[in-house]
Length: 74
Image (cartoon, rainbow, N blue to C red; front, side):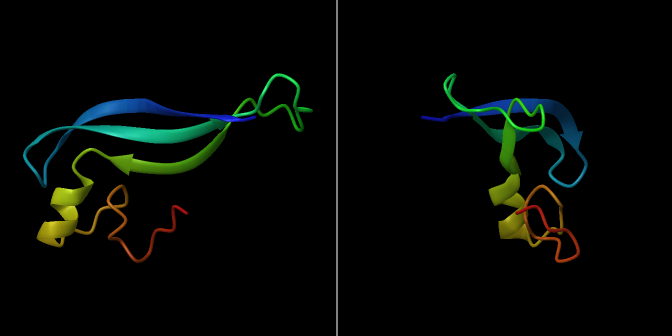
């Protein structure tokens, strides 16, 4: 069975929220008995920021907060 893990990609200062935030990825790793294809060790399921809820509440269009209509991170 595959395992899911949350990994912090990087930390940065957000100018919109005026504080430090972490950019995180939800990664899915295949089990050891799964046939690996195309040399991929994991797949990114979703990306999010620790300040995403605050950006959503303030109406800030940020690609990490899923509020930017021109960016598709599904």
